[in-house]
Length: 86
Image 1 (spheres, rainbow, N blue to C red):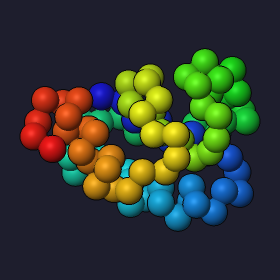
Image 2 (cartoon, helix red, strand yellow; image 1 turned 45 degrees about the vertical axis):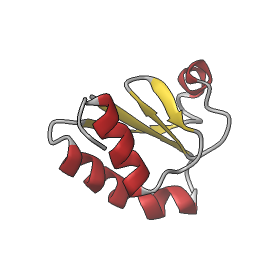
Image 3 (cartoon, rainbow, N blue to C red; image 1 turned 180 degrees about the horizontal axis):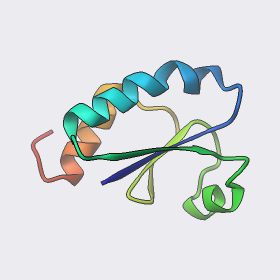
Image 4 (cartoon, rainbow, N blue to C red; image 1 turned 90 degrees about the horizontal axis):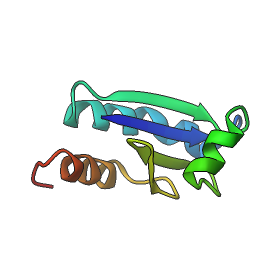
């Protein structure tokens, strides 16, 4: 499973939540692939997924959160996609 956090340099909200979200994702799915995507550097990819505002989060190349989720919201989404009880 792949998780991509779309952000922009200097985004305080992105930086503040990134570590906690990543840790929550890795606790839930130990072999998860976590990638941080600078939306300005990968603009075409961000547009392809439908990212309109930052921060945003995609799971397996599907935009799931158009704003920053809480760690518990991310864990629920990951468990649901992994066939686990949320």
